[in-house]
Length: 186
Image 1 (cartoon, rainbow, N blue to C red):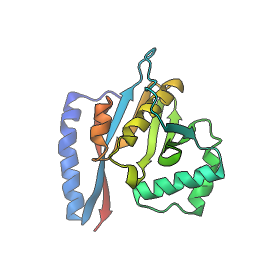
Image 2: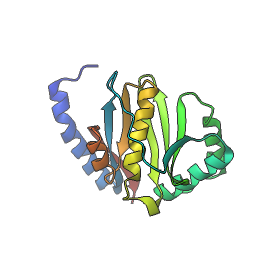
Image 3: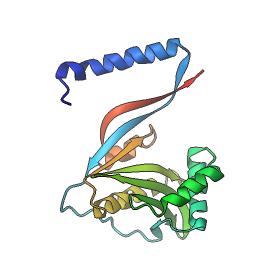
């Protein structure tokens, strides 16, 4: 579908009207994210420089899933229950998904999930243990993830950036597409 300039120009006004209507009905914006993308250039090298003690691994075992869940739960401040774990266990054999952890000096410190749909690879659940936040782990991990996506023959990397993650993704060349607001009833 081709959008006319008139429709594109009215989108921010429509979003403002919707925001106002939701607020009048006692719905509050709980958090917002920015949808972003990064084109992967064909033939470009994305391999990051080696970093002593830093390693990215694909999750393959029950023990590795437990570590991934632990970091995800801490980074996002929510609990992943037994049912969720069963679902995650089934994903490790799905060829459109890669569940990853990053280790610093053999200690697992970060997690992510990649999901490939056609030419696009979505980055989900990218989280860093609280004790390692602000120390460059997310940047290092994202550089490795970009290289993995290029080797996986994706043409675009897509993600939803939190306010805190936005500067990192912008510095890596990701482009903002639109704002996503998540509401909850007050």
